[in-house]
Length: 178
Ligand SMILES: CC(C)(COP(=O)(O)OP(=O)(O)OC[C@H]1O[C@@H](n2cnc3c(N)ncnc32)[C@H](O)[C@@H]1OP(=O)(O)O)[C@@H](O)C(=O)NCCC(=O)NCCS
Image 1 (cartoon, rainbow, N blue to C red):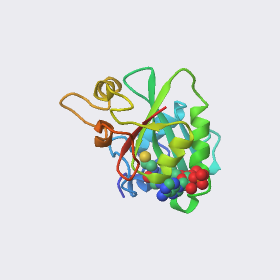
Image 2 (image 1 turned 90 degrees about the vertical axis):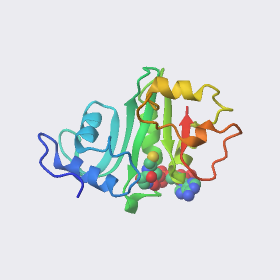
Image 3 (image 1 turned 30 degrees about the vertical axis):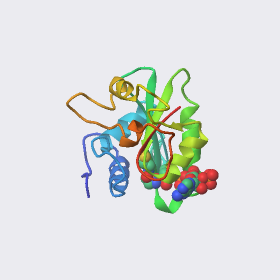
């Protein structure tokens, strides 16, 4: 178990969800804390699906999550933390969460990063395009501006975004923009 129950004021369902998501090994563990999942949801920046909703709209047993996170640049948001429990996958839950989340805001642009083919498919169907230098010549400057690459700090920009040719999604981690 990665996170213990009983963090102050955090509903234990977020601990369960963070543990379940963490066990997939697909997520950036810095953001994957019960508190972050809860805060993002209660601020209206994430969607959750699950069984037995309480009066605050929090399910006792969450099985899916998707967040829209502010970036350093107010004009860009990151769609992130996409998760559907394995037993529920392939039924359109991820697709519906993406459609609903994107319909909430207007006037912003979105980016997302993933190496998961099913998630990449969902992103493409919702108008996201994979990025290389051919698509966005200033991608490194842009990455710094939105906070993906922090000078002398974390570098989250995928290596594929620095390629020169047309994007070819044949595996690997990709940046998508919309
Ligand atoms: C990615 C994830 C959120 C998708 O959720 P989901 O509810 O299963 O997705 P949906 O059923 O809505 O849609 C999946 C789509 O991908 C397609 N797909 C599935 N596997 C695929 C593959 N290997 N290559 C291409 N497309 C694929 C499906 O056909 C479906 O498209 P369709 O609606 O046209 O049939 C889910 O698989 C998941 O949580 N994975 C583990 C965590 C993860 O990797 N998250 C992404 C981290 S960025």
